Image (cartoon, rainbow, N blue to C red; front, side, top):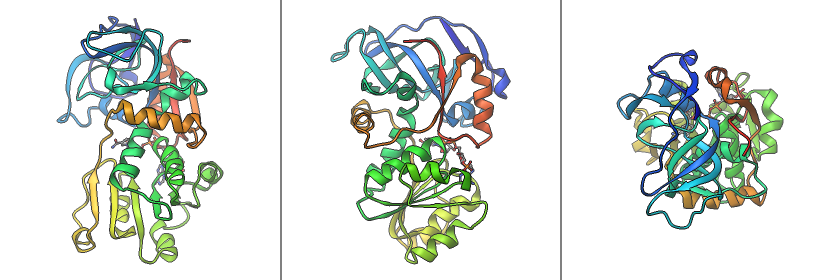
Length: 319
Ligand SMILES: NC(=O)c1ccc[n+]([C@@H]2O[C@H](COP(=O)([O-])OP(=O)(O)OC[C@H]3O[C@@H](n4cnc5c(N)ncnc54)[C@H](OP(=O)(O)O)[C@@H]3O)[C@@H](O)[C@H]2O)c1
């Protein structure tokens, strides 16, 4: 099959387009014809980050996010048929066969039906960021109506869907983004966009919420942003860190703050519930830039710029 792969760690240009063996579904898996999406984790793994957490078999086809049509059903799989249109998160701690290829073999527990009014491209960009946002805001932070939440980087892939989810949960939504993206984030439900290039978000938010916020989705990596999340959350509040363990700050214990590094978890049942919310228009889709599979290196470079809005999808084939 046609796929993008790499044979060593390195910059985006090590991504090659070529032929790789079509995967064979193991027991408990399905084989899916794929449309894929790009996530920052793809380029970080390609660059050699997080090596201690993953095992690998080279060459590696990157990518975890996909939508597509089931082509084959492995042994011990029930409830899925050839021809079903699905979305899923092909996460594994063992890296080898990802979603930047014509087919992927994936655990049947990691997929959900793709609603008919969601296209394959839209379906491909939703699983990773939506599951992450849900697991952070609903499961970990337990956001309730009327609570206040900061979503860092609201114009990014994760931020776009997290803003929409926080709004759906009934929260007052603060987010940081450049002014040119204010319309974009307010359309998705942000009540208080803050231009982090013009104002200090901690000062602005604490003027409005002197006791602090109920929850922060902390997806930025700089020391300042990592510490700001703790400074901003009120006693008994929660910080979901997306990139790092909580910083060593006495306020965490003193204010009884819950703070943890969370990693997205494949969960087909949860993804199914989330897809229904998109299909019903209760959650808003991110903006999507579609690139051909052949442009995967360019897509990784764009992701490395930290300046993309919404998501990048890779068009692999018409399904
Ligand atoms: N733990 C997990 O399971 C998990 C899951 C998903 C993502 N993540 C991590 O979360 C981070 C965000 O992911 P993503 O997919 O949203 O990335 P992304 O789409 O590449 O984020 C790009 C966005 O970041 C914004 N941005 C850049 N610097 C900013 C700053 N200082 N303040 C506010 N916004 C800023 C940009 O908006 P402007 O143009 O407005 O600056 C741009 O829209 C990544 O580090 C990723 O690895 C972790």
